[in-house]
Amino acid sequence: MSLRLPELPADPTAPFPPGESALRQPDGLLALGGDLSPTRLLNAYRHGIFPWYSEGQPILWWCPDPRTVFRTDSFKLPSRFRRTLRQLPWVVRADTAFEAVIDACARIPRNGQDGTWITPEMHAAYVALHRLGHAHSIEVWDGDRLVGGLYGVSIGQMFFGESMFSAESGGSKVAIGGLAHRMRQWGWPLIDAQVENPHLMALGARLIRRDRFLSQVATLTALPAPSGPWTDRFGNLGAVELARAP
Image (cartoon, rainbow, N blue to C red; front, side, top):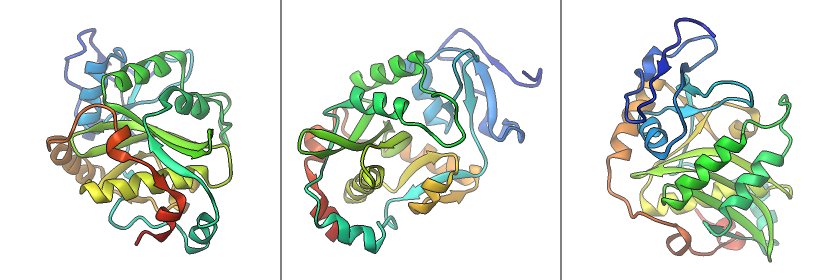
């Protein structure tokens, strides 16, 4: 690892290097080390920083430029897919099966990836955040079968997406569509999707400059929001309702 890369101290309250100081190659690599305690993770997200590493590596922290995001006020599922949704009995819920969602995200094969970056340490860290009311799952159900979902972290009125999966074609589309729909109703404007890939861009993600992203994160994470599980607040969002949403 490059000697230019800062190593985080043991104290989980220690500040991160500024996101603007991240490497250009690999894009966004900012620091290494530290731990995945709730205190450190929440501090990272408040500054637009996230962990991403593989088994056997030290913990690596990232703040890429540009950043991949979804704008909830402009998110719209494709017309053809919306027509399909009208025929499906699927229902979107939140925080009823967090561990099942993160397990599914870890198991689903990814193009160009050998294995998963959701290590046992990462799994345990986000389950701990979920139990504290900071990490949430969005689940797509066909009866009692989980057909898609995503999980991420919320702070203030900002959601930081971590991973998504589909067990049936379109499952992840419905999960991100349901999340964007509810967030738009709540007045939350932005979903962080971290790093560009073809699937995200096909769903309508866009790229914004890091400085603009970090400014918006600072504002949105400071806003008040209800704490705890989203199950009741999110409610049941039927695929038919989502297909008809403006």
